[in-house]
Image (tube, rainbow over all chains, first blue to last red; front, side, top):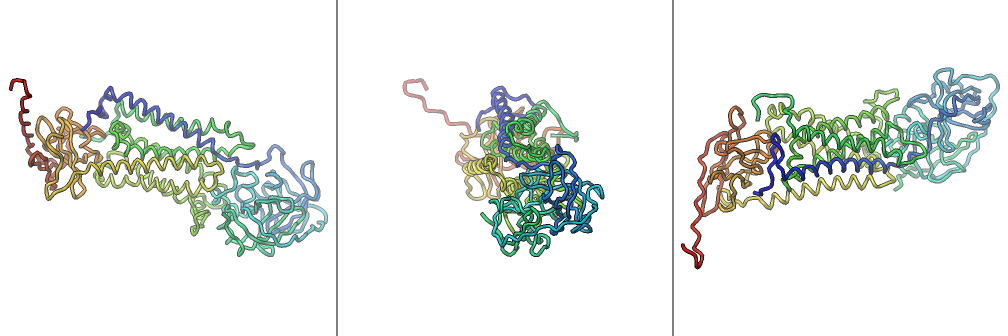
Length: 251
Length: 357
């Protein structure tokens, strides 16, 4: 048995051991502090998405379209949102505005809320009830619908709201459960393409023939995938009708 | 040793221990929460709730890593034993840090939905058939439950109530918790990292735990006593030092501490009645074997703590055969007195040439 100093918890530490223990204590404190720095400083950039409270409340008029996710095609804009813009709509929290938008499908409506913005991805979080969405006077113009053919795209399915800036970061596998909850709550899903498609990185993603994103696709949310589907330009918004059978996880 | 329960038997060393560990945790969290945001220089900051969740989660992982490194480090070098002394308090701190992490996650990612956040936590992601995208939150839940069980049963009341062997086995849950945390991190945040520094730090921490445990196991295996028949060899008489022990490992896996005190050998179980601490790594203080973990003391001849304390450990019979000390593997009931075996006086050395005999 060695003759190293013997420590008994309820007795003073032996003299020769004190220097070692002092060094160990300093190492624990400095080591944890250093680990905190390195781990904290290694976090990735969450991207530029954000609630644009600095823009103030935005109120515009346009044509409501269920794609089947609710979209507004602006006919009367303001200083920031121009006629011809198309953007998705959502409610507060992890909820969509389907129940409010469905009765107004194809009609002119006034929408009001806060904008979420990430690059060329726009979304509006509407105010509650009729303050956020209500029918407007006038005839609804026809919305241009331009089929763009079948495309194979590579990228990630996200929930549009978190991606647009409700959460930073609002994408990736660590965020998958949150994204699924948003999609289950009728928040519009977005496909983030690895390459711009017809000038846009973001596409509203739906099921075939105007159906909602199939539940089978939820397993692939937040994963890097390749899939095929028809792209249609509705107003100035690209809608990709994903063919779930063609989804492949990409390394 | 104790004759009654008090909530926490504080002493100066415990205060110092807790202060150091708290300072370490505070340093980690303060640097992560308040220093690194300026360093990151992102166009738009990470959400405070997510930043906080990451800080507490990373801190809990580091704390668990330190906790699991202390044990094997103390087996390899006894100078680390004081870090083991109040490790339970550090474990309770870890549970609090981990539950704070869980709180931020639950109240951010799983809140604001029409469904209950606890329900959402369990059903939002059901991709069980794949590795990428697997609901890694479940591993975190399991680890948190383990940590809460360990924290709740860390008090000496549970040690006494469950008995040390059961309590000790229960607290091996710390390993299940650590593996679960490793899976939680590997299938979660590591899947998204572009900056791989965190990955490297995570791997370094896990590697430290593994390497230290393997090193301690190899060290103990090399020291295991050879077995021969019913009586197990311990060491040669000349290898014993006054006031210290040699540890023999029996065929049934039990360890025996054989002490030399006042020229006589006695054997007791190596497992302290308090927390199964290694009595053979202690020493004789005031004629009593003193456990290196928490200072519990025993009469080496009877395995009994001095009055008024009541702890007892099993004793063993010894014999000396041709200079080899041997222990019989059948343990006596705890507290059984056994006559110590006198060590034969060494033979007189031969007179050196040219000196008077």
